Image (tube, rainbow over all chains, first blue to last red; front, side, top):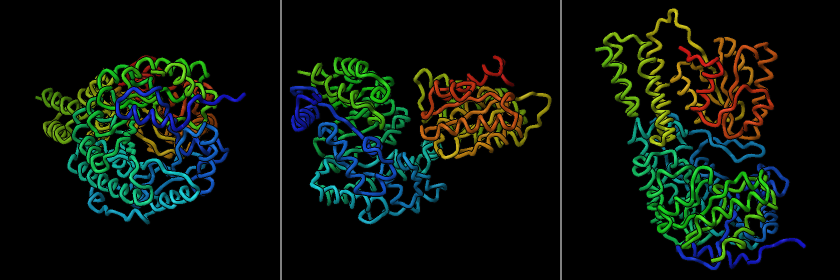
Length: 346
Length: 216
């Protein structure tokens, strides 16, 4: 007999909403956060085929959705490339990897020349909207809107090393770029909202973990806060899966209701819970590689430890510390889901 | 007075005050500080101190990146003034393999190599195998550092090693591989001399691989 969870996706969604409100639901909810690499690998097509063809992207996501008990979300996106492409950055499309961005702003003067695109039509942002409409025409709800955060986008546009150097060498320039990226994120969300409605937002800003606390406070916090304030929603999520142990209290101030954090080999969720667990819902943080390279036993053990450290008092969602790797094995994902039933009852 | 200037250069780098560090280096050169001493007594120790602070959790990745960029900017100014005499300096060639454009780890690794006294030739990103080999031969490098982030591009590491063999250079250079795309197991499989999970570890390995002698 094929195993399936003893709860429905609707129940899991309700528990997730309660956890986001820092409550104790009936059971620890589970979030399987995946990208197109996962869906394409499960469907045996390349990532590039997904990006290039909306039908294939849809079919791959639908296949994964059905395979994993309807616990996955439908979301058509182009990874971190969307805003940079919309501004004219050159994008590299590997055969079976996420698209990468070649830095656009080589000279300091280039920052002054940036112009806000019309996200309805610009390059990948326009394509994302078209793909969203296609998914909707197939009867699917797009449950959230995703944008890169200002620090990530600034790094993509300038080159991460160069932007981090700007923070020290030319802070005014860094602030100018961050301000532009914040306004761009807000405008992009506004345009996506015309298609998907007032759904929660997800800001992905991994490289904020590279910043020391004083730098995070100046160069990340106000900009991320601005976006969350503009789109205040109960399930807003910050995805930042780099090591943030030095920035925890600041993460809790971003305005996100849920923080999708990095993996257990970098961050002890028990300590995170102690320090900020009453201020923000924690989502994580199983070491993602376990799902691809571990056994169901090691996955279960890992999940048990995390649940024991983080579930008490509510405000916790079991997930991987980062996205689920593309070659994750089904039995391991099953083990993760089973762990919430076995160890996650309140 | 020269010692004081050297100390000022070192402190401004440790403070990550880029503008001040550049000014201090200019001042130091103006008053006749031997350029090579600025590297060995200010820049290298400063970078090592920054590395130690990072290991202790006092500094973070952005700090490493900024210090690496600073070193990269300061060195050409200083090296322009240098007359290399009898000092033997071990050379390292580094780069990100062909097809990959990620450079953060590589840049930090480069700055730690400088901290440990290597003369570093950074070939940048998306570097074909032959280019690595040509540079190793040209400068007689003892260390070759290869970085890769994308798992699909890890075969490039083997290409470089094979290219070294074809050019009869394999025995003359130690190959260190690193980056999220590679594992220790894979590094061993392809015949690399070492695998470094982090940049600072890589620099220390480079010193050890050359026989535990700190390069000058």
